[in-house]
Image (tube, rainbow, N blue to C red; front, top):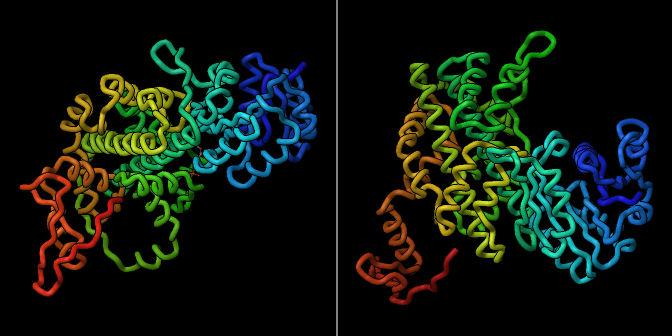
Length: 482
Ligand code: 6PG
């Protein structure tokens, strides 16, 4: 028996993915840097299945059907480069290497090119859904060398989560060339940061302003999960709030409020700055995690600082919070999708935004009902500039933004930090404003640096300089854009 594919890296994600593939009828070669894990697996869970254990890279490569398909499920970063080098002597032109970790898309872009020179196909695939997703069906975002897709497509389709009304649409598709698969996964994670921060801000209002207890909050989230906010993150929030330890205490109440991160949110933000895209909500979500991690500074600073208190009617607030969360979510996805469009144009990835929304409907951490509406919006208009102006979302926002406005005001009145919600609102307001105060800003730039400005009564692209102080010269500085 030869392996149809090999999974190298046998921590929980690798193991679960291998079990998923095997359960679909494919024999799987399994390997790991420290072989003990493989031995243990073969003595336990692996005993019955079509698993082929490999105790060296040489054995691993030899046990695979040709052309070989090797999927690395290892830590992102340098380890991937080292592992590629270790595999290269045992691979032949036409073989495919897949990186299923959370790699930086720029690294993937480089690796695709490097391996192409050697005749090896390389795929960088986002794999979302955590441990259970890997086992029962993740959402997968493969990109890189297109020629390799035909060889792995069937396996990817078989193991991916299924979505759609008939539950038959696999949550995977070919994303595009180069590092596009990992890029899309990075933005997925950025959106994940945004969703999590938004939910946390709702929790802050419910806990600290409304005074709801865990049980009440769990109920609120589970009710929302039956409506337009239906999503994995809302669902697990309800479960988390209700979970007690063996002493009967709510676990979440004892968790230290210091959020950690591994970098994908930051990469989204860096890319947003590079692309000149205002992805403000995810940016604030990253900063909120950083601020939360400064626990001792916060504790010291909070001493003696009175929080203003302005209570709110529970029932009204819960209704408004539902609207606020929904509106802010639309705005966040509008930013994230707009970023993907910009990056796609920049790197010529030809990303299909509707398909991306479609494969995020199942398996992944941000799966939700409303991704159906996003898909529909892009199906209706592939050239859509921003989700907020798609007819459906425009109407939804008209109905819900007032909730967002009220909740941001409530947060501010009560001294509750609402970075994600308030940045969403500022973006919404800015995007829907014909005349921003940037005319003044341009005048300031021209005043102190002769940076020039355009005029409302002259064609765009025609630049002017005014000698504001009467002392500067008439020479203007050059123009450059972000
Ligand atoms: C997923 C998750 C997964 C992981 C995040 C966590 O899609 O399955 O996004 O990739 O849980 O990387 O990221 P942080 O540690 O940065 O929160």
